[in-house]
Structures are given as structure tokens and as C-alpha cells.
Image 1: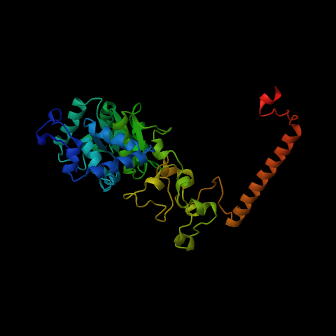
Image 2 (image 1 turned 90 degrees about the vertical axis):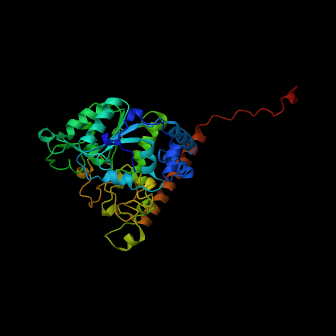
Image 3 (image 1 turned 90 degrees about the horizontal axis):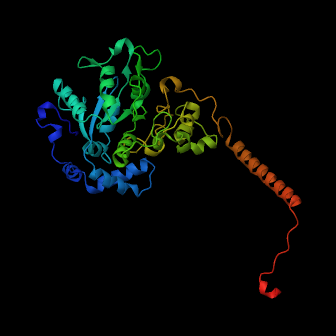
Length: 384
């Protein structure tokens, strides 16, 4: 699926033939219509106006094929699987065709010294120009011996490769802040990219367990289209994906406001799709665009499927959001144990109170208003 060069492939990257995206996609059965659909989805994911889909298409077609390496450390390969298994609109086909993926241990043809030669060649020939994606945490304990590749520690590899990259994308919770490997007592000293290799200037964290491949693709497309990283929050996460509370976007939000909750798994509320707050849903305190982008070709996401959000895109979520089935102690807004009719009467009371305040303000204003000035005649000529 991806084009991964190894020493046994014969031709070096520097002598690769001129690349034409449209021809390459057609060869893979990706029609022009499907490509434009992909660009539209990317624009929508980045919260850009629909007209930007054309800008994205033109930019991707004209771009010189950037080189990318994908490093895997302490991980379950879930982020790679998530990226490769998206079938519509063909993220794997399009993104991995737009980018020249030169190194990825899971899917590349080369192995052993051939694979290492490919990585070495990228660092030498494309120093400061290639894109690096990191999956998995990086162990710091005992010199990093808990994760080695080809006899070298993940820590050593990360500190050699990442400073040479033009941009670094840390995908998944583990690459961001250590994830489940770095949770609890953390025997291997697992940390995220930012802690293992401090000082990286162009770093994008794409938290989630796993990451949402559409967000990762959008972040990459933004970089390729505009030549810069998307706007980031305080955790170096793209604002387009992590800028809004899940609670505010959730399709079950109306049930929360109305006080309709699932009380136990399988009850009437669960069958009717009521709010999962009492079952431990962390949506009111988690920011992510799951309700909008969703998973599995945008068909569903955990809450729609009947399971509460566990806050997998939150910092150190394995520690800070567990126990996952204990409800949040305090959430602003309506809900909790308030009944629907109580909320209704509360809303009426608030409206009534606001009306009284407004009427009172009008009465005070009328009392202190200075006398009206005489209104001049409409036709000044009549005074002459």
C-alpha cells in the first residue's frame, strides 16, 4: 500500500522519477471524484470553509512529494492499524501516495540492515526536510533498555532522528505523554516525545487511543497545503480537533439537559439512547471532535455505540480519567440529579426573572430620562 524504499529496491530517493499525483492515484483506482471528496473531508475536518477543498486539491497536486518516516516504539500498533484500515475516502491510499513513506517497520518491504539503511539515507539526504511520525511511548528507565530496535534504544533513535525532521507528529496517547505504558507506577519510565526529546520546535500531538486517522491526515494536509502547522493549543494539539468539549457536540446532550440518564447497563435509558453521564462518561471534561469526525469511516463513535467517553484525548487520561465507570463529581450546567420537569420550571423561572429585571430597568431608565427635545419639522422649508 505504501511506497517504502529499501536498499534492495535498487533506485535511490535522490534519483526517483518525477511524481504525478493524479496518475499515481488513478493507478491505484482512486478516481478524481474520490480525490476531491477526500479534499472536501479534509477541509471540513480542519473547520475551513468548503471553498478551501479546491485549494487543498491544487496544493496536493502541485506539491513535490515530501519524504516521511514513521517510527514505532512502545506501542500496540493500534494507530498504524487505524490509519491503514480507513477505506473511505481512502486516507491510506491518498496520504501515503502524496507522501513518500520511506520507513515504517510494520509495512515496509525491507528489514534488518536494509530498513536501517533507508532511515539513515533519509536523515542524510533530507536533513531538515522530512516529516517524522512517532507512534508509541519512549522508555527512559535504565537508559531506555526496555525498547530496542536493531540493538539501539528507542530513546537513542528518537534523539537522533527527530531533531532532523521539519515537523514531528506524535500520534496516539502513548507518543503524546506515555499513554498506558507510562500510567501508574510506570516501571519502564515511559514518556511522550516532548519529554524524551525536549526542544522540538515543530511538534504536533495527536492524542487519542487510538488517534483518529482523519485528524492526523488533516494535520498533515494542512502542513502540505499551507506550509505550516495548524493552530495548536497549550498541549500542541490541533485546535480544529481538540478545541471543543465532546459534551457540547454530543448527540445525547439533549438527554443530559433534560435529566434523562442511563442508570445501569441495559436499562430502558440505555435502550433509548439516553445520556451516559451517570455511567462515568467523561465527555463534559474532554475535548475532541469524535462526535463530528467519528471512527470506522465516520459511522460511529463510543457514545453513539452505547459506551461513555473515557477521555482518551485528555492529558494522562489513564491516570486522570480512571476509574472510567465512576461519574464525574461536578459538571457545570443542567443535569446531574435534576428531573426534566424541574429543569423546565427552572428555565421558566430564569426567563421570568430576566423579564422582571428588564422591566425594572426600563422603568428606572424612563424616570431618569431627560425631557424630550422638541421634534423639528420634517420640512424645514416650511419655516421660511
